[in-house]
Length: 276
Image (cartoon, rainbow, N blue to C red; front, side, top):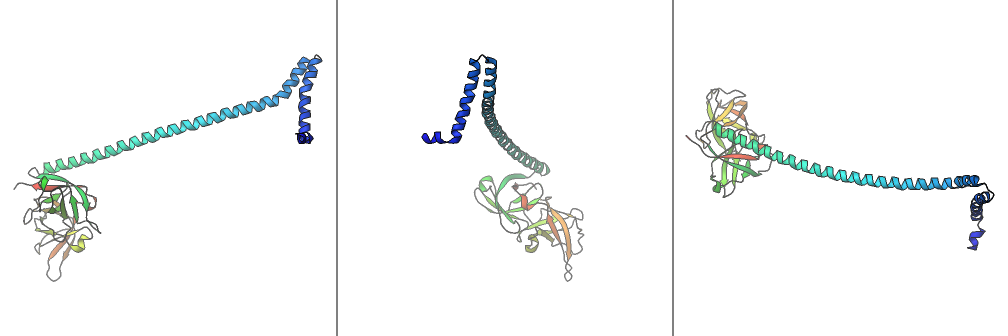
């Protein structure tokens, strides 16, 4: 305590405080009350200013934190609204896909009224550079059997090569052992569309076993003939992409680009029956 009174700065501050407190009192005793009040006002003004500043600062901090809390609440509400909108969008997308499938199914039923179909969903597909097989969620319990044709509204996919009670495997027309009786509607020329190991890597197949003088042109449509195969007639197989003529045997073959996009299939129709 004694060391505090020996501190020059403390003594100066104490002296100034005593003088500031004493001077207004002296003026008041001497009858200069207005002057005393002015002195008190002058002396206390800095303290009032400091107090007001501190109060405003606390008020500002309060407004700031209140504003931050409000912003956080608004952000949370927006996140919840965004989540609900995304869920609604996903539901709409699912419904749209389902409606599209129903439209395609009805279109197939209208185009082929004598056909009976069983819709199958793709569970898995063969891996590799190109897709040659799928596994669907339909089997013998749903009336599916081996060698049934598998199609989409775009055209021929392939055939059921293996079947279980609740699943089946589908081999596409890209498989080397696959064959479809086919013809060209424009010229009437007939032949067989079959898979080819080399062409299959590029997602194509070939049209062969045609007459040497067959009238085949690039861009010709190839349809199933319903002859010498288990595929119903008049199904789209693909389009002629190029023509090859063997220089020795003069045999004509054509490269066919399938109508179906095998890389983007989710659902297929298994043809469980069709009329004559």
